[in-house]
Image (cartoon, rainbow, N blue to C red):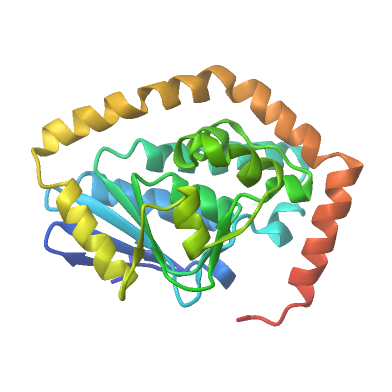
Length: 262
């Protein structure tokens, strides 16, 4: 069912104690202000629901999430852009610190911010096949804000950092498993397998799981907080550079010319 008041719905279903959020937020689940608002609203509802012990997040069709909505974001004035960057970053921190296990059911492409969305989860199940996942911000001339960087550092094994972040490589499913970006590939139904993972991760005491998760993510939270201002400044400096604007502009033009629904 869609959440009340959602114009671009997040559909919620539930399998026993595991809630499944299917993102259907506009073209390719591109992250814009509406996307962030609806994800936060969905998490608000689930956090207070005692009947939910774990959460699965998935996309639609061949897309999990393609990252920033460059059409909308490039139209923002400087102050609005800075506010958006903070909200964008806070969403990943919210997911990473959510007090119940979160499983990403990566049904299709998870690019840039879409990969970060998956990295914010505690566990990642990816559909086998040709869908790709990766953090390609460097290809656009961009660094990462604080929470974005920390969830990438947590989710990508150290042996794959340089290839994943410097090169901005996009890994197909089998490659992503070998590189450690995902925990397992789904043999059939990625959502069903993610739900089973959610049941396992939440089988213990909810209070114990909540405390253990808080302790596990405490170093991440501390680093996000300590470096938030400088990393935001560096990101905005990169964004406003001539090189990044040229690279972003090319991608934006491709998106504008692309027919809706593709």
